[in-house]
Image 1 (cartoon, rainbow, N blue to C red):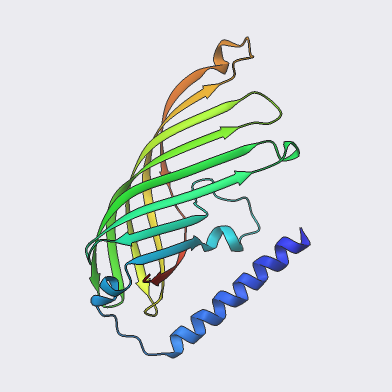
Image 2 (cartoon, rainbow, N blue to C red; image 1 turned 30 degrees about the vertical axis):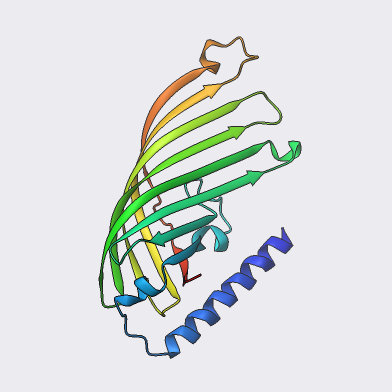
Length: 195
């Protein structure tokens, strides 16, 4: 636990130094920046820096490819591969599309993702499958040509399938629908680059 806390403190100091360096440079947003830097890689700062439980709707790695200055293809991946002591493994992924408009250093965007989730418990033969549609709206602030910070909110429409083939309980193999407001409190630090 001490190692994890020192890692989070190191990341926080690193991000603060990047922010101060970027802020010391005068940056006027150029609408061509998105055209030059078509790739964006993002991490959720709230999950890295918090000492509380991780947000299950956050993705470890977020990637966007800008087709042009108005539209982008979005993706996200979250892997939790654990030993039997940690109770299993979990895979959460998404792919989607967004439209946006820039003004000065800001970008407002909206879109939708398709998400897929799978989990398997190592201690019990439980499996969970989930598919979802996630309409979203968000905002991004560019504080340098290579770095931005963004947040978004989603309305998650999920379909769950629960399976436990070795159980005699009729409720062990069920299906359900769920509507959840998601991504609240998610703050992404994004790095923009070209290949």
